[in-house]
Image 1 (cartoon, rainbow, N blue to C red):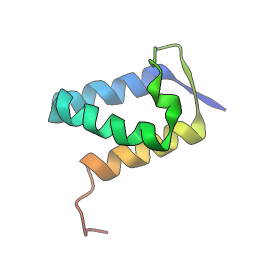
Image 2: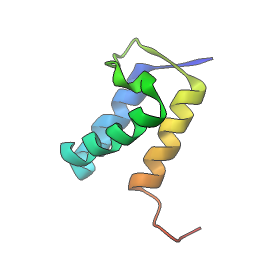
Image 3: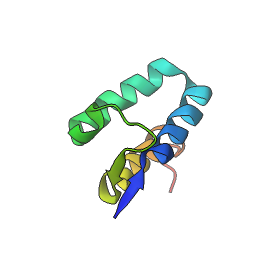
Image 4: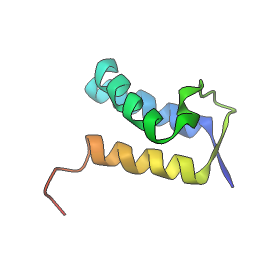
Length: 71
């Protein structure tokens, strides 16, 4: 099963609007070390394996939305 790149692009836009391009780029550097797939450009029609997208989304939530030490 795959997720279309448009989902990734939407999250990217939202996060950049929230924290800025520099923090997004830093986040992506770490993500690419974990999932090299994301080193290639993601277009709206790019198909992303669900396991890659879910890992991306989990990392995104940890980095930008979940307060450290809060569960």
